[in-house]
Image (cartoon, rainbow, N blue to C red; front, side, top):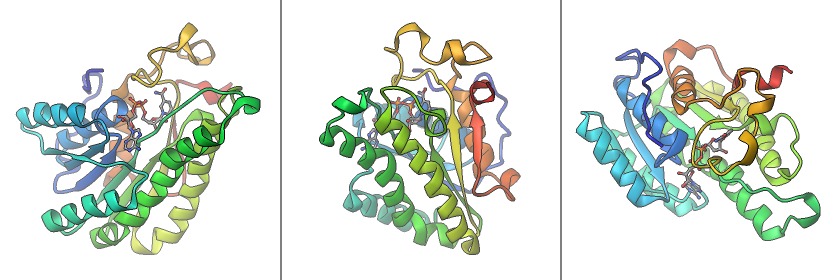
Length: 256
Ligand SMILES: NC(=O)c1ccc[n+]([C@@H]2O[C@H](COP(=O)([O-])OP(=O)(O)OC[C@H]3O[C@@H](n4cnc5c(N)ncnc54)[C@H](O)[C@@H]3O)[C@@H](O)[C@H]2O)c1
């Protein structure tokens, strides 16, 4: 997946001076977010467990003059969060944006779902976002105008046979986001959910019959850049009065 925002025109300086951490930032949507946010002026800490892909991404974007640093971060580990946040604190003292984008998926009917697989998926998709908000909170408070984006899915809003763990995880993120928005508003930290429809990434490249495309009015998956522009908006002052809500970017899927 070539992370590029060629289809969008990025406002050049909207995020200048902002420091943003993106989880799952080595490939797919996260890599595209790192590119877009840095292109808008942010310093981006792209974190993932795919170290060679993450390091290659950072090297490529640094080669374009963008400020993107890669760090290993398993979002299920409180110790790993503490380590990365400590490094960011030493470098910048504060954090202005957190994008909880890391996620995994599997397809298993309820009757065959295993406890191990269920627990693993919820650990990454839900607990990872909770740990991220907890770990980053002290630095986000120092920003004075911080924003968190939790990446859910249309499958957190509707049901899909075989996706019990994934749907449960993404529905939990939508609900968690509203709680976080209420709790963190006094600290001037906005918290919103991004709700993507089908997006062309390694996560779904093996899907047969186009996945959600037949049920998507625009009859295609999104390009990653089409999600990154939404993330950039939510992190920017253009969204200064937007908190506790879902930004749906789904080609019309949920309108049916
Ligand atoms: N692709 C889609 O159609 C689609 C649709 C809706 C929502 N989403 C969501 O968008 C987000 C990004 O997914 P994507 O489409 O770019 O897929 P992807 O598989 O390319 O990216 C997910 C990234 O998360 C990382 N990751 C997994 N476990 C991790 C962990 N424990 N710690 C840190 N990083 C970890 C992966 O290594 C990978 O780089 C996910 O939360 C996904 O659920 C995807």
